Amino acid sequence: MHHFDNIPPVPLTLEGASMLHQMLRVRWPEWRALTATRREEILAQAAQALTNMEGQGSAAFSLLGHKGDLMLVHFRQNFDQLGEVQRTLRHLALWDFMEQTTSYLSVVELGLYESTAKVYGSLAERGVEPHTPEWDAEIEDNLKRQRQAMHPRLFPEMPPHPYICFYPMDRRRGEHQNWYQVPLAERQRMMGDHGAIGRRYAGAVKQIITGSIGFDDWEWGVDLFAEDPLVFKRLIYEMRFDEVSAIYAQFGAFYIGQRTPVAELGKLLRL
Ligand code: 76R
Image 1 (cartoon, protein in one colour):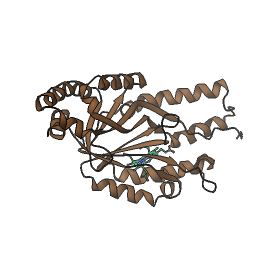
Image 2 (image 1 turned 90 degrees about the horizontal axis):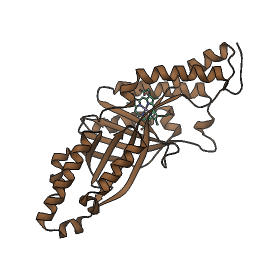
Image 3 (image 1 turned 180 degrees about the vertical axis):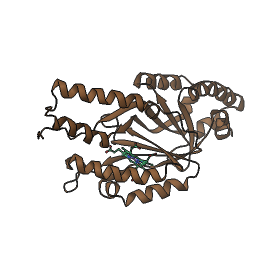
Image 4 (image 1 turned 135 degrees about the horizontal axis):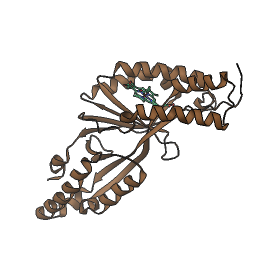
């Protein structure tokens, strides 16, 4: 058994779809000031473009509360395509009556704590030094196989559930409690416990974790989808007591939305 003191602390991850959340507020006074005919024209133009987007991995959610009227959620293959989404939206007359209160950019991320420990362990046992060509090739080979197996989770369809809960979060990097200085094996154990709680909710909630380190102001975006919004409260409350959340989780703003098919957007915008 060889020991290397340069085994990477970062878990292996798989990245998939690029994701953009856009929180929008309607400029009601300006919108109201239009004639009904002009409003209908604008809605018709927007409906066409948004229906098209719905077929390509976008969905609209009506937001409850003051944080916005609408949240658009877009899954795409890459950032180029998200840029295309933004350009298409900017060309709509409706866009002049919408204000982005905030947005969030991230990529679907599967954290592979379990297999990271196995792969690093097996490489170390065989005396393969980290970051050598042999090490890199074995890691890449492993990731490639998992990428294929996980393809449906990496490029998810928009879940059909009527409710969404989105929030960004960090792992704590405090003076005394610092996730990024906890040994890999211990993080693996904690993430295992986290996953075990999550899996008990598997039938009631669909979770999509996106990574945003280097892309946005928080480290991860959490999207939960459910039939019943109370499930969000129960799941998140239970997780608060779990070590990884109790000690290391810090949360941004929460957004709760109701799926609004584009065909029904008029309901939100018609006066
Ligand atoms: O992807 C997997 O199913 C493997 C296990 C798993 C990982 C790696 C998993 C399972 N999660 C993972 C990663 Mn999660 N998750 C959250 C939150 O509110 C809170 O306290 C935390 C917010 C919820 C509600 C949730 C739900 N998870 C992560 C990460 C990345 C951290 C890292 O890599 O360091 C974060 C930030 C995070 C946060 N998680 C599950 C769930 C649920 C419901 C599951 C089970 C899913 C299933 O098996 O169907």
